[in-house]
Image (cartoon, rainbow, N blue to C red; front, side):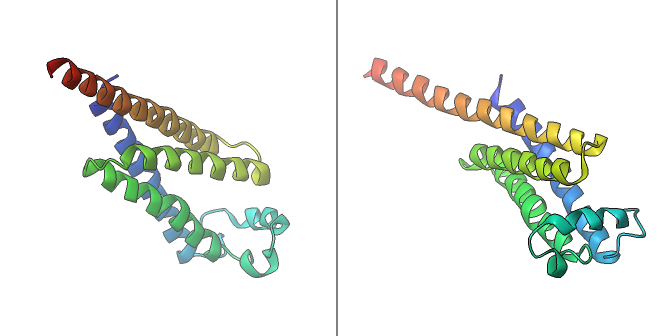
Length: 152
């Protein structure tokens, strides 16, 4: 698989998840009760988490965490991919793992849901493609080093 294709898929995934997380944060800050967007019943499920009586009386804390954990990391990774940074493959790998862990927590709290399943699949794609990208970069460096040795 070509590195360019891996970069394009990763950039698309990171932008999709990052923009979605920012939109989710805006919704949670706009209506912290969750009534407007039908999430109010989910607040009860958050009561099993530590410090629930302080942090999870509404969706403000959840929105800020969503922004920091999935929004900014995914968009930062999209920027690294755009700039062709050497850190982009590792950042993509971490974003995929973080997204799958996030969805795993949602599954434990709320059960399976089609949207969670889609996002988990995107996280798995990010992780697999990042692994392939890291492998391709290392392989290309090895091939380049071997070519240099042969030409000397």
